[in-house]
View (spheres, rainbow, N blue to C red):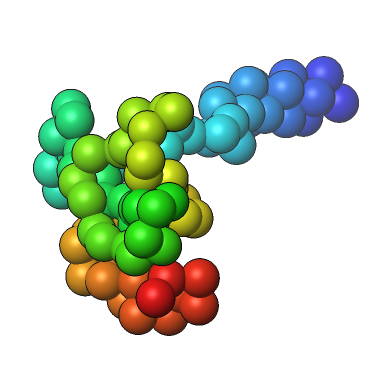
Length: 86
């Protein structure tokens, strides 16, 4: 009986680490340190929108519409879909 109990405990001791959560693994290259972001910006005077690659400064004549986009193509798609831009 002791032999079976010791064998079970030993098996559990070696198997337990395999059930632990593994850290997230990245596949491929890591993203660059400063990933490019594209913003949909609206001029508050003319109400016209454009895609810019730098976030407009607070208090300026341009305001950001929506969230940042990772690609210019997705920002252009958002520009055509947005109804607040003329």
